[in-house]
Image (cartoon, rainbow, N blue to C red; front, side):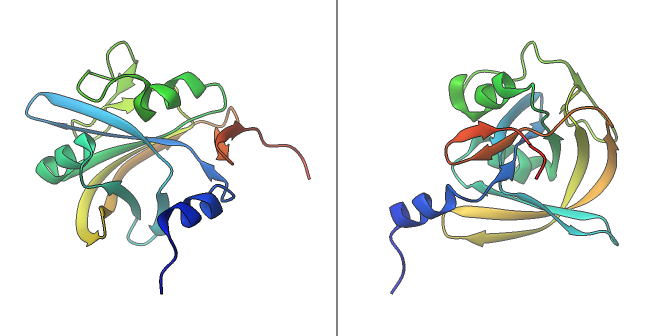
Length: 162
């Protein structure tokens, strides 16, 4: 017996996560989406993973290019998180007007985030409606300033001292 998807969705609301924007580019097309399904896998070799719906436009670009970028957002970037979560329609260029940088590959990364990772896919695993992408981190940079943008119980949160 498995749990109904709505019950799982309700339970997962109580898992606090940081907010990232995953970006990809291929043949002159670029796209990005807000993703909380992101984690470090290994430091040696340096690897991370993301999980994306197979119907997502960004998923298709990653499958074609085999590269993606991770921009970890800071607490002042709620508007960017909302933009990449779908407030700007999927068929539009969500990166239009956003200041980006490139590290190693041609993947656009959000310049003002807390950290940026340039990644190359090494393994894909299909699971249900999603694909898990495990990737080697080709390059990374981070800022010492700012607090992370957090998401918990359907809303953005801030870090407070315990």
